[in-house]
Length: 143
Ligand code: RB5
Image (cartoon, rainbow, N blue to C red; front, side, top):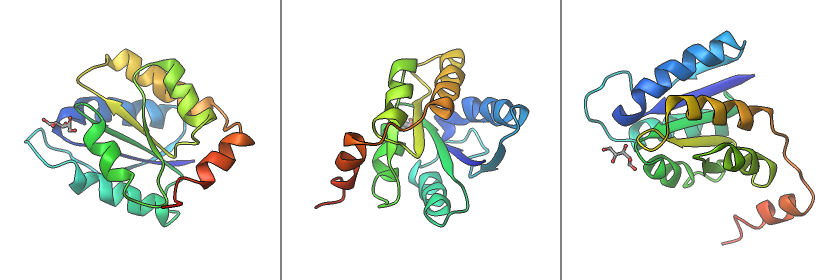
């Protein structure tokens, strides 16, 4: 499985640690930046990640910024992306089980790294439930 990952400056530290974690678990990882702690703009990294998922170059993505909201709002402008913000394991599970999120978004300034990696593990190992949840997902783009 190939996972794309991106962050802004606020998520850089967690991104670096998560890349090591994911590589250690045998995932292929594509890093879409940022790779500097200089202040930067989250859309510059969210759009390339979203484009790669929509093009089938990565199956899933992880995006990290301070609150998670900038990344989530940007990513969800892409029709092929369902980006879900999670700050605990229960939400990390439900965002896959119910929403089939193909990008997990983490709020680095509001959770510990220990929680971040736990959420990633939960999200990656939870299956989409399908059924009524697929029907609801099918309606998301009806606008
Ligand atoms: C950066 O200061 C911060 O605004 C950003 O990481 C994110 O929280 C935006 O939604």
